[in-house]
Image: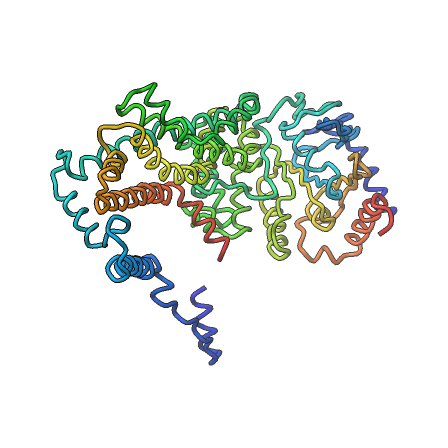
Amino acid sequence: MTMQTGEVGRVEPFIAPREAAPGVFRRYPQLTISPAILVALIAAWWLASNVLGAPAYVLPAPEQVLHALVQGLTRAPWDKAGLWYHTGVTVWEALLGFAIGSALGALLGFALSHWPIFGKSSYPYIVGFQSLPKVALAPLMVVWFGFGLEGKVFITAIMTFFPVLVNTMAGYAAVEPERIELARSCNASEWHLLSKIIMPSCLPFLFAGLGVASVLAIIGAVVGEFVGASAGLGMLLMQYDQSLEIAPLFAVILLLGVIGFLMNYAVVVVERRSCFWAQRAHASMRA
Amino acid sequence: MNLVRAASASVHASADRAPALILARGLSKTYAGTGGAAEVAALKNLDFEVFDGEFVSVVGQSGCGKSTLLKVLAGLLPATAGSVELNGRPLRGPSSEAAIVFQSPVLLPWRTVIDNVLLPIEFRRLPRAGYRQSALDLLDMVGLRDFALRYPFELSGGMQQRAAIVRALIQDPRLLLMDEPFGALDAMTREQMNLELMRIWSQRRKTVIFITHSIAEAIFLSDRVIAMTARPGRIADVMAIDLPRPRELSVINTDRFGRYAAHLRSLLDAERGVF
């Protein structure tokens, strides 16, 4: 192959024009353009609060929010007046609920797909329950579980359950029939069919569901805390709102955004490792 | 045309000669209609036999039930009526003596080539270690030895299909069921794969049932060609191909090849009506 091209190069004096190298913005948009957007947003924010004179109880200046954020984050993790403690509480609720909800969603998704009688008979209830705003269940959680951890985990689990369930079922339905015929033609056991063909085939779909669930997990935990809690970032939001401490309120909102981003990013990293073949297959199809 | 008649006559005579590896009698398959639709007769009353070591192609238009026939022979679909015997025993479900090659390679993208080849071994709960060397030898035979540890997406379409053929051969089946295995490949790769399949077949002497809609491919590869009519699928004719082996691509230009092709085309066109 290389020898051939070398020979062609020697015989033919014509040298094909090189493709222009893509610019640094095209190659690394996350490292160049994304920070630029952030700078632009903060600049607009600064202008709105400091130059256009938006009142501090509506839009606190960025430096005030930064000050609140630094103050909160420089306290010890066990200090209930700091942000680390409440971040830990909320993240723990979100992670527990995410783990329980998505595990149940994946398992039930496989089961409902694998035994179509269950799937078909429970489908209307799944659709009905899914179209219900899960936030509406939050007050009920307080009645059932009180103000502790369990209620928040429950609401988070319910919120993360559905996207994982639905995506797993979509993944199951999308398994190439030939893959199943291949297993059947080799007299594969049900368990081999599930573990060696169907489950790996569903992985890209499962991760799509987990990506959505990871963002919903934080929402679930915060909504749970809104209804009633003694700790957590959602509880802090309510507290700062009532005392009109708008700069710390903004700091908590920023923090929630960062946490949601990191949880989603963690899912993406795991997905890249375990579904490397799906990404490569796509890349080779495009090429 | 005399030649064709004589050839198919000798085939029917040979039916008494040796025990058949596959013996189909009155084979029919009807799909139940769903949601009030009428039932669909895919195969109607097929009688044929395939002898040990024989290469038999089944040609017919799309929708004539070729793939249904293959799935019935693979034990993946039960027949509605009639019987199939494989090696003297009635066929009930997938047999370890048969292996399938599909139209698409159906390689699992998360497994390397060699792990894909060894998949049937895992399904049959046989020791992987005992088959590793023969997997490498088979990959060597089709020129994929250096790709054993690569992933399918790193291979071209033709290479993927060769890996799929190796996956079928790893179980050392007596019968190879091939469902338009080269239908998705471009014309050049397809010719190469035909030659390669001939080479593999002459080395391993499997019995092959080869489904295709290409008349030229069927004649080039086969000892006998079964022509099927469409809806319901019936056998229009069974034609013996009396061309010397090993065959080269130039055989396509011979008169005899042309007469076989014309006969098959007339059978299939008669089905289609005008055009």
